[in-house]
Image 1 (cartoon, rainbow, N blue to C red):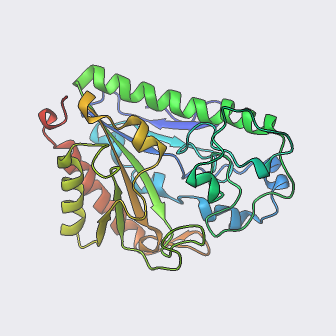
Image 2 (image 1 turned 135 degrees about the vertical axis):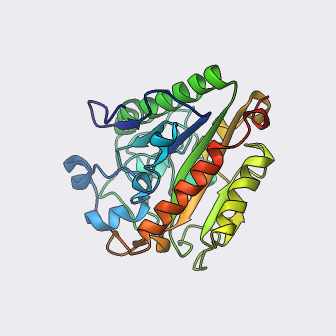
Length: 290
């Protein structure tokens, strides 16, 4: 079973032998806030964590013992977001002009939440001053590409071994819609399942996950306000036997959103996610085949 990479970019927890065609990933639970980043930021460390999917890596930590690999980013989302295209950047954040290949017009960029975020989820501006584009290039080369190289390798190996792969992208969400989101100020349900409106995975996947959560007593909706990010869209190709589903858990279920500490509900959610992972592991492989 592997652990953190030598440069503390990623951690891969994996069984000795993968037994099921599942891969789990947590791109936003990293909490290695470097001194350099903290010096660049106008925000205190606790405010920076508002964009972090705190403890999601721990909530799903049963995955390796059930026979599936679990990839985790160790760097914080506020520093670099791997659930974006490699170059979704806001030109207002940079000292120099951006190259023509940069996507400056996406909805994520408009909201301040590109590959290099301008704001945290509360809407607070992250940086004291504009960045050089070379800073973005360095982060993307050092963090983004290694993360997706590892994820692509895991999904390719799973397809080679089983003939199919189901990627579960693990996230959490604020309990109230943020100022940059379409449900601004609204109280959210317990779980949001993002399958890109049915295009990223076979119906049995979303149906099974929704049924399990509902049976456990959770309020569940699909694709609103989150239909799935870059990872779901990029890796979810059901016609090729490659499926992806994004799961968003309401943070109020398991943590204090102000102090970023676990609440008494943490253990129950963790146990329920084990039930979910077992159900996914029991899915007939033939239902995932191309």
